[in-house]
Picture: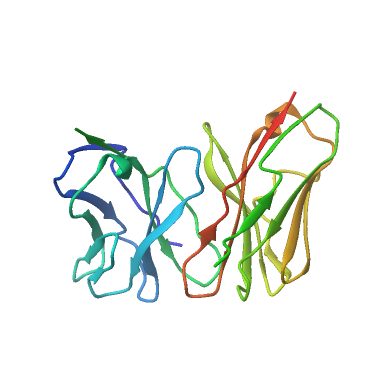
Length: 109
Length: 112
């Protein structure tokens, strides 16, 4: 599976957009990019995933660069409840998914 | 829809005792994963199953750990004998490829 690199921490003002970057320069053509988040004491929660095209759902938007070597998760209007650790992973096959250290996002009033 | 169900949610046990963690995956999912999370090591994949068959157990720490999946709706992770360093949150997760993984709420294990 491709390795991902994320900043260890980020801050965001409440109500503003939070843009979380992820580098996955060794991603292969059939690997999906997935984003999860983990709020303290809870199990990780799936947010969004994509292969080549940008994706949007009710929680967030995922922007993948044309060369697929990086992506950005966008939370359009961050709230205090979005404070969490955000994990970017790439998934080679249907089975194994390896989580890195993630980005700790702190949304401030 | 019911999510991944884990039990017990919290367990405190004495060193040397056997610990059994249980998991019911989401109905219809064909992959089941066991993860362990600690402050020091983060979220580690221990083992995963596909159609009830163990596919990769390379993350299992040592022979004290064992996992089974006797049918599509039940899995166990057993630690025998338990040690204080096994204290962690153990997550079970399931998926129907290529749909993403859905995690349970975790089993918080403390070995004293």
